[in-house]
Length: 280
Image 1 (cartoon, rainbow, N blue to C red):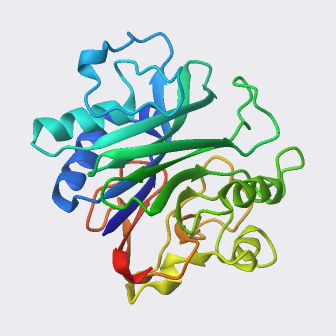
Image 2: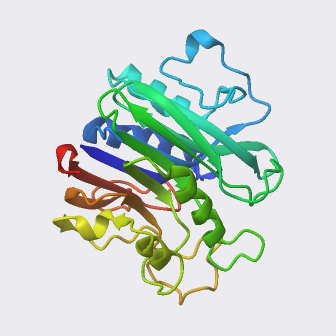
């Protein structure tokens, strides 16, 4: 089974149409079973899509209206035109750049059975850029597993520290045995005694370290928003990851969309793993 995560940057990206096509080309070739996306945007004043055009969409909250330029909708639509079908959900979280509904999304090759959402930040103000929510799905193909798209805050944020967001997450997920968290954790794996170590101490497993075959894992190769001046220029960060609540048999972990085997489509690179579903 293949899982992919990518912080898309979506509509904010320069040369966005070309990058969307490159993303779709890669997905059509790789066919990940589950795709978790972050920073998935739509323009707030774009036309609302009629229901007959929302093929495969499973709303996770009642007021998650899709608009015509919604990033995940258009990715799914373009894949469908190639004969590749995905079900998907999208959770709007906050106002981005003063004109976008920005959120997170999940795509599944198997029909979505159930959705769930959680606000992990203290604030729930849609106009506050520090508002953080996560979304999860169960699918027909893997009904015993939950897959969550996540985008957390920073460890040292005085208003919205990662530790508090992580505490809310694991409290909400208690009782769910097989859980995957895919996304932008904003806590580099190489930094000790901060968010990455807190997750490990909570019993969660980094799929990168479980993988039998892997590359360098770096998903941020240059200074980007939120990280300017925090590390020496050129330091690679592994902040986009896939974690599991139970140890899994992970065959491989590959960085995607980093300009090597697949084109760059965002200010982040993606991560794709392949694992034995019965090995959990």
